[in-house]
Image (cartoon, rainbow, N blue to C red; front, side, top):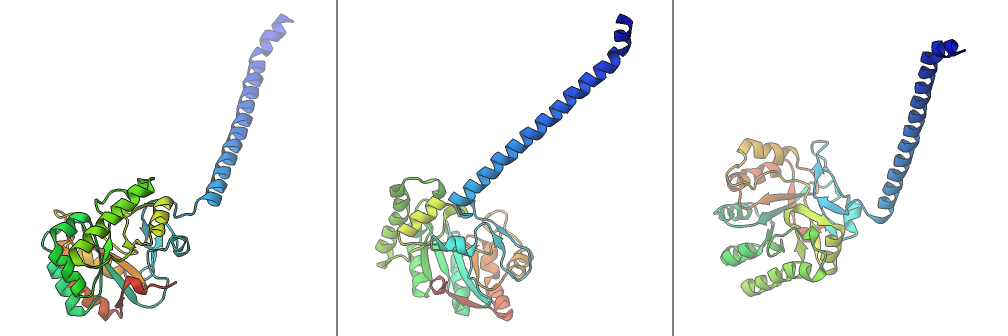
Length: 281
């Protein structure tokens, strides 16, 4: 008998190992099913409690030339917070905006090109730009442009949980604008760095602000790495679309150099220019 067992031991070992492998495989299947179930539950919870506009860095995906990009929040989701990234329209209209972090000599040429073409723009300014360049800000207003709120210190306001701190960033700029121009600042908000959260969108709305993202921009803000004219036109002509809110930076020497021709090219493509205040849902 012992001889028979010894002879069969290898076969028994194989069966034993096979049984272990089968049990491990079954365990893995159950573990995977459990994890998938947990993940699905988390997704359902997020879908029920958080809109797609909940938080993050503003982002765009251009999928078809001449058509609006896909953004990481829809028109409808942003509408809950009086926020925009473009107009939902087939009309060939552009809403031109500039973010003004500081002045390095390019804003006068930008204003000259806008005046030549009779194009209105919105300039989103921060505290140091307003404090250091009051004459330029007054010139913007005198030429019919709008000045919006880009916060006083340009922090990541998506991380602000204290409504009082959030309000102070906007109100301090409002106060300085009133002292500088004698006018009330338009209640238009551009989130610094394009960072936002559901909470920040709601707090801006509760303060009476509309939030404006964008549907077309390009990397134009590095003073020592300015795009060429060809690179700028590739993006700004190839990706323009009906209802676009365009973001440019006033610090860009490329923008100052090309704006006159850029406006002409857009006009030749059949585009006109509107004001953010004209946006309707």
